[in-house]
Length: 268
Figure: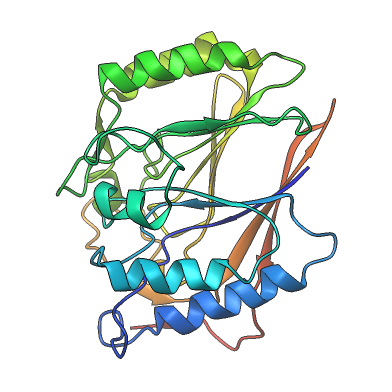
């Protein structure tokens, strides 16, 4: 099973540039064209949050129109720039529940060797994340569908660990992080991996042997600065796609694919 992942698209309104510099619409279109051309073809595309910049109907419509060009399914979770109610209208039927309830769901297809679990790690109108008691209880029940022979692949926006990039860690998961990590540790034989975004960079970690993988943004990167007092800044690096190959008895093997040729990176 080949899983493609993109994240932190930050789609803006038509005619706008993100921060006055970045054409996120063009960046997404290039990613979609690259994904459509891949051979072997991915089984599924996962988008791990911050689909849009301001969560307007028009921004989501541009995204769904682009995704219609792919002939394999896409599943999404919200990031801190998204809006649950608007996402539910754009991706009808993907996550049941009230408009403002957490956008959580699972995909269990018998022909797939993995169960996919999308977790909403967001807090409405805040940049930081949370995995509340209700979401933890729901996840514990869903993990019962997974087995060591057919484990779960979790995807979410905020990473469940500190990355060392201070400005992003300050708006990470601030509620339920310890409990989430304990839950994963208790079910580590049923979890193939955890895929995240939010930090706009390729970062690897693990929880009790479960790999945790952050994909890079398709739009722009957070500058890598590991000083404790480093300010938040951005870098224009090439767009990338994460590809995760699941091999039975071999686990999850991840690759990073560049979308276009490039001369950078360039700071701004």
